[in-house]
Length: 315
Image (cartoon, rainbow, N blue to C red):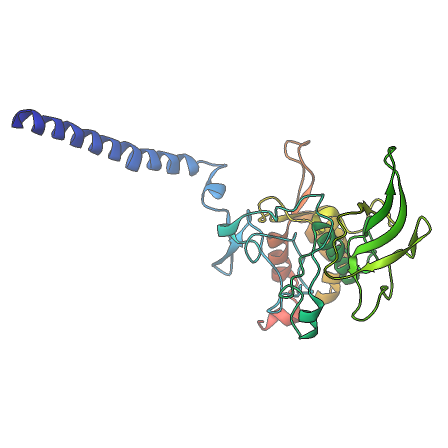
């Protein structure tokens, strides 16, 4: 190949590189940005940033936690959904918990490590999705002054699940010879739990779970219990969204928080209900989804109109 041909090919490649750089690196991004500034798209394209006192405090599209330094919910704020995104609502770690509806058996903590003062997680405890839901429901019920009971949960706030061992029959039934409450570990030095959620199952005494024993040999049976089928604590209060970033809660979850927030701010609950209604968005197009309440916008509005004494002087 002659030198002139080589130079010609390199110049053609350089021209193609320059053209593609201008088109894909400048014109296309600029065009997309310009489209994003059109009315109706502007806020979302720019992140739907919310400001308070002239400074950005969050986005209406991404939830955030309203907890103190110890992770406890702040009484005068509405609380959002649980989040598995990083330490909670982390936009760089958007994700669900990846636990499914069949995740109902806890991984028990090592009692020897617990005896040394280790926290349950460090001792190996990993709650199932069912136990997480039960625990959250019980805690929210206590905090909001409503019944936190829900089906398949023990009064103690763990999954009501049995391992039924015995003789299995061809018709799918089992004649139990031993029954274990798999999510209720035995207290140290005891063979039976101090308060089992169920005394017996089909005439067989229910045992507590002994650390290290494998109960998967039995039939895993979740027990509905006597809780109402329509719990007072709604589902979105105890389960996270697929992204872990959902900024909204249901109107039902907002409703059970009204009295607590009103008491903490020292105002009439009717004023809080009016604020909730003002920040409630209806179904998309009138029929898609459910009405929802934006937690950040609601809390900022309450701070502006009815500041709590604890926040008036700064936290």
